[in-house]
Length: 77
Image (cartoon, rainbow, N blue to C red; front, side):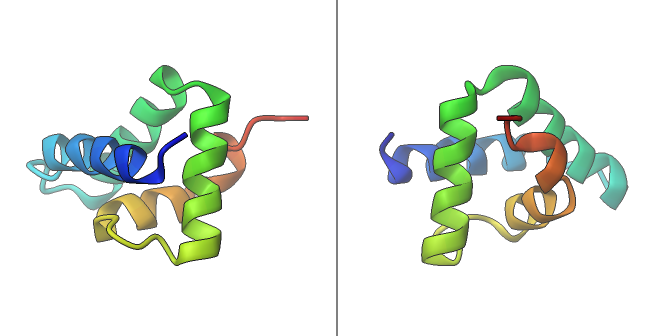
């Protein structure tokens, strides 16, 4: 998975949900979309980027959503 493409896609999701003024709803929207529509391999690659590259290029709201909902977003082994 190309991390740059994943970053762009995650940021696009965040842009949509950033219109919501409720922080909790915004974060839940971002993580919920990623959980429902992203393949587990994509989610793993996004977390790898977050962990190895400090989430370079990701919007703050994406980083926060990934951090808050990490356990539910990571695929179970």
